[in-house]
Image 1 (tube, one colour):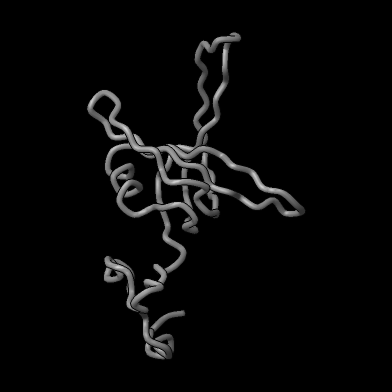
Image 2 (tube, rainbow, N blue to C red; image 1 turned 45 degrees about the vertical axis):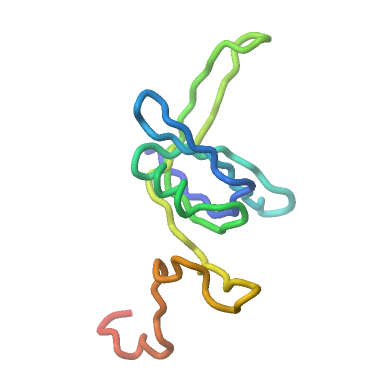
Length: 127
């Protein structure tokens, strides 16, 4: 089984391009190690997921990514270069957008996030 689940913050704005009529988005997440330090793997999203990345993901956002390891290689200036990427299958938004510092109002697109009232758990028929 080829499955990876990662939670981290985007290190920069995603890079989006069109490759042979297909949208491709690339970005890196900072993933904390258990003891100290961090890793910065590259994530690749295609088609509709790339459009979602382009529209909603920005530097510093905390997200969860489910994907699969994809390896490849190409000829570089000094010989063969091997690559390891995570191809994105699912994106999980892990934090709400921040309020605009100047107005105190939620940023545009705040409606994209659902607000659940306090105490709602008591009314749900399952836990």
